[in-house]
Image (cartoon, rainbow, N blue to C red; front, side, top):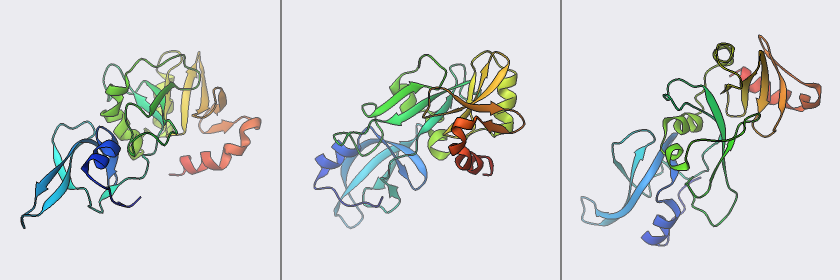
Length: 213
């Protein structure tokens, strides 16, 4: 989505402040929007932000073509309570479809729900919003199917690892099941390659696209 202008700074703040958008492909958290003078002495509306999981503050002209206001892609997000590098579980991150909310993803319009087969989510919206796992989800960074399967094989009961924002592997006792972010039940089994159950065969093309990336 290209920049299409804001009527004033109050409008820009209400639409963007404290929300996640992107600068090109990089997800950012908008901290503030202020007027600043450029080298010619003209007042320019500047957006102050930091990249997700970083503390360094950056600034960009709000009219920059690098700013991407399209909704960030969401789905299954891997996370860990013991350390973000050790994925051991996942949740579904989605956006509440309401026009009254901000352009970007915020605490107010972000929905966190358990992955299929799980009972609850034990992390806060505030912790997720500026986190490395959310950055990885938006940028499409997931462990491969092979790596995800190996993690699940060596993990505890009901471990769930996403190998794509739409598909994940879940360990149920000794079995490895395939789950899809939109359905509350397993959609297949996970062997060397995942295999869909007959009633979910309509997902085959989408699954093949994920595996062939």
